[in-house]
Length: 119
Image 1: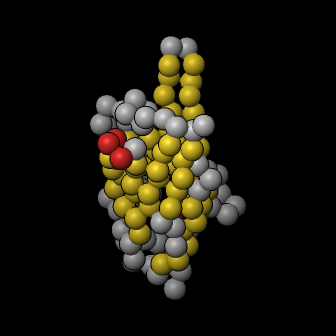
Image 2 (image 1 turned 45 degrees about the vertical axis):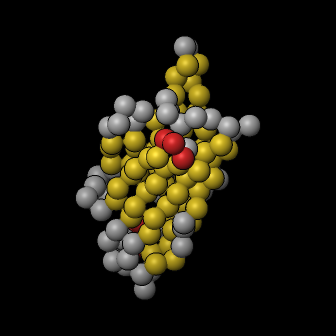
Protein backbone atom coordinates (compact mmCIF):
# COMPACT_ATOMS: atom_id res chain seq x y z
CA UNK A 1 0.00 0.00 0.00
CA UNK A 2 1.35 3.40 -1.01
CA UNK A 3 1.51 6.10 1.63
CA UNK A 4 2.74 9.67 1.53
CA UNK A 5 2.99 11.20 4.99
CA UNK A 6 3.61 14.92 5.39
CA UNK A 7 4.98 16.52 8.52
CA UNK A 8 6.46 19.80 9.68
CA UNK A 9 3.43 22.04 9.42
CA UNK A 10 3.04 24.55 12.22
CA UNK A 11 2.09 28.08 13.12
CA UNK A 12 4.76 30.66 12.37
CA UNK A 13 4.99 34.43 12.31
CA UNK A 14 5.40 36.33 9.02
CA UNK A 15 9.00 36.28 7.92
CA UNK A 16 9.62 32.94 9.57
CA UNK A 17 10.67 29.60 8.12
CA UNK A 18 9.41 26.05 8.12
CA UNK A 19 10.61 22.81 6.60
CA UNK A 20 8.04 20.31 5.44
CA UNK A 21 8.82 16.62 4.96
CA UNK A 22 7.03 14.05 2.81
CA UNK A 23 7.94 10.45 3.61
CA UNK A 24 6.90 7.84 1.05
CA UNK A 25 6.33 4.15 1.62
CA UNK A 26 5.10 1.44 -0.71
CA UNK A 27 6.83 3.04 -3.70
CA UNK A 28 10.34 3.94 -4.73
CA UNK A 29 10.20 7.66 -5.52
CA UNK A 30 13.11 7.55 -8.00
CA UNK A 31 10.94 7.45 -11.13
CA UNK A 32 8.28 9.78 -9.75
CA UNK A 33 7.78 13.47 -10.20
CA UNK A 34 7.31 14.69 -6.64
CA UNK A 35 5.41 17.86 -5.88
CA UNK A 36 3.98 19.98 -3.14
CA UNK A 37 0.54 21.52 -3.57
CA UNK A 38 -1.37 23.78 -1.23
CA UNK A 39 -5.01 24.55 -0.68
CA UNK A 40 -5.90 27.67 1.25
CA UNK A 41 -9.33 28.54 2.61
CA UNK A 42 -11.51 29.91 -0.19
CA UNK A 43 -8.78 29.31 -2.76
CA UNK A 44 -8.16 26.74 -5.45
CA UNK A 45 -5.45 24.16 -5.02
CA UNK A 46 -2.18 25.36 -6.51
CA UNK A 47 1.18 23.88 -7.34
CA UNK A 48 3.84 25.09 -4.94
CA UNK A 49 6.89 23.22 -6.20
CA UNK A 50 7.79 20.19 -8.27
CA UNK A 51 10.89 18.03 -8.43
CA UNK A 52 10.94 15.90 -11.55
CA UNK A 53 12.41 12.44 -11.72
CA UNK A 54 15.08 13.91 -13.99
CA UNK A 55 16.17 16.49 -11.45
CA UNK A 56 14.43 19.62 -12.73
CA UNK A 57 12.53 21.87 -10.35
CA UNK A 58 9.54 24.13 -10.95
CA UNK A 59 7.99 26.66 -8.59
CA UNK A 60 4.74 28.52 -8.41
CA UNK A 61 5.12 32.21 -9.12
CA UNK A 62 4.04 33.21 -5.63
CA UNK A 63 6.78 31.19 -3.92
CA UNK A 64 9.65 31.55 -6.41
CA UNK A 65 12.78 32.62 -4.58
CA UNK A 66 11.37 31.87 -1.13
CA UNK A 67 10.70 28.13 -1.21
CA UNK A 68 13.06 25.28 -2.12
CA UNK A 69 12.07 21.72 -2.95
CA UNK A 70 14.56 18.90 -2.57
CA UNK A 71 14.47 15.13 -2.53
CA UNK A 72 16.51 12.32 -1.05
CA UNK A 73 15.71 9.26 -3.12
CA UNK A 74 17.76 7.02 -0.82
CA UNK A 75 15.47 8.02 2.05
CA UNK A 76 12.34 8.08 -0.12
CA UNK A 77 11.73 11.58 1.18
CA UNK A 78 10.92 14.99 -0.28
CA UNK A 79 11.38 18.29 1.50
CA UNK A 80 10.02 21.79 1.14
CA UNK A 81 12.05 24.56 2.75
CA UNK A 82 9.88 27.61 3.17
CA UNK A 83 11.50 30.94 4.02
CA UNK A 84 10.18 34.50 4.30
CA UNK A 85 6.72 33.15 4.96
CA UNK A 86 3.72 35.39 4.41
CA UNK A 87 0.15 35.23 5.64
CA UNK A 88 -0.88 34.26 2.09
CA UNK A 89 1.14 31.07 2.50
CA UNK A 90 -1.36 29.81 5.06
CA UNK A 91 -2.78 26.57 3.64
CA UNK A 92 -2.92 22.81 3.83
CA UNK A 93 0.22 21.55 2.10
CA UNK A 94 0.00 18.16 0.41
CA UNK A 95 2.60 15.91 -1.17
CA UNK A 96 1.98 14.33 -4.59
CA UNK A 97 3.79 11.58 -6.48
CA UNK A 98 3.13 11.02 -10.19
CA UNK A 99 4.58 8.82 -12.88
CA UNK A 100 3.52 7.10 -16.08
CA UNK A 101 4.07 3.35 -16.29
CA UNK A 102 3.39 2.22 -19.85
CA UNK A 103 -0.08 3.74 -20.42
CA UNK A 104 -1.05 3.91 -16.75
CA UNK A 105 -0.82 7.12 -14.75
CA UNK A 106 0.13 6.47 -11.13
CA UNK A 107 -0.92 9.35 -8.89
CA UNK A 108 -0.65 9.37 -5.10
CA UNK A 109 -1.48 11.99 -2.49
CA UNK A 110 -0.78 12.49 1.18
CA UNK A 111 -3.25 13.79 3.75
CA UNK A 112 -1.51 17.12 4.13
CA UNK A 113 0.05 19.21 6.85
CA UNK A 114 -1.29 22.59 7.94
CA UNK A 115 0.84 25.72 7.72
CA UNK A 116 -0.47 28.85 9.40
CA UNK A 117 1.31 32.18 9.08
CA UNK A 118 0.08 35.03 11.25
CA UNK A 119 1.22 37.51 13.85
